[in-house]
Amino acid sequence: MGLQCGIVGLPNVGKSTLFNCLSNARAQSANFPFCTIEPNVGVITVPDERLIVLEQLVKPQRVVPTTVEIVDIAGLVKGASKGEGLGNKFLANIRETDAIIHVLRCFDDDNITHVDGSVNPVRDKEVIDMELQLKDLETVESRISRTEKIAKTGKDADAKKAYELLVRYKEALEKGKSARTVELTEPEKDIAKEFFLLTNKPVLYVCNVDEGSVVKGNKYVEQLHASIADENAEILVIAAKTEAEIAELETFEERQMFLADLGLKESGVVKLIRHAYHLLNLETYFTAGVQEVRAWTYHKGALAPQAAGVIHTDFEKGFIRAEVIKYDDFVKYKSEAACKEAGKMHVEGKEYVVQDGDIMHFRFNV
Image 1 (cartoon, rainbow, N blue to C red):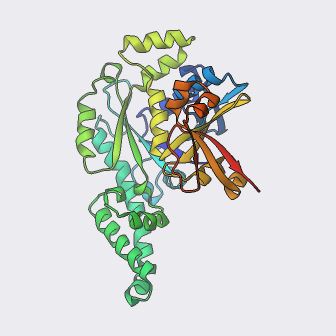
Image 2: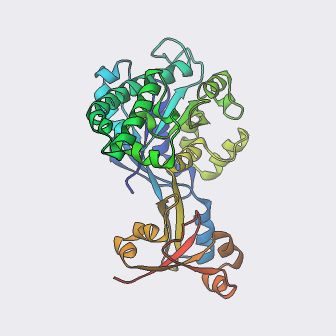
């Protein structure tokens, strides 16, 4: 689907370490490939235990997981919005992404120099926020100047709505607040997409902590929690150094023992990939046959024809119906035939909203 999450952060916060851990993500699971499109773009498999279960039941010739793209974006410095450092490249790269993974240093280590001389994740967050907000303010002011005259004539209702929303964004940005803090109605969300504001992108804050703080966090994580109270954002706690150590272990069993000693069920990298997938508002449906069990990515809320179009555009154009089995029913009855006999296969039409975990077979005619 071409959707990307961009990893951003100040220098020396652990951003590249995390990206390198993602590049070794195959070490976290039996089947976890990684490939490079460019030096800083990775296509990473989304871990999904349901695929393993379906493989055991169907015994297909192959299993194909779904993926998400992660981009390691150039480090940012103060003044990026005015082109300082790699500012122009940073802002151009982040504009091309669909969501942001913002890595923040939340650990003390005298051997790792902080660009601003001390550890303060809230301050670091505000540095990047400010640069993105300044760029957004520039965008909003430009759009206002183009929209205002048309909106005030009263002849164009869409222009009037856009202008009113732009004014609200301008007020928030001038107060040092990101665009995502502005509450929107559903129609306004559609209008907002046309503005391509950097601070309107969904964001996940990743707190890079020391090994001892992975489970319970620390004072820096608590400070960050308090600072994002009015944002529509989540926090994930990861120890990048520990993740790097896990990736170096030779066997899956060794890695699981290492995680168990830390009191963890899965690695932070696996959690990060899963969070990135959901940050993009994506869900998964499956096709299951003897030739292939496959996970397919679709936008949450998609109708059956749209989901069918993920496989091939002809499936959407010629959509007739979808035969749907719920994942739990498939696991319970252990085969498509048994589900059908038990009345657990449902025939759905064009208005069916696909649910995460649906096992689907599409009928179409072109």
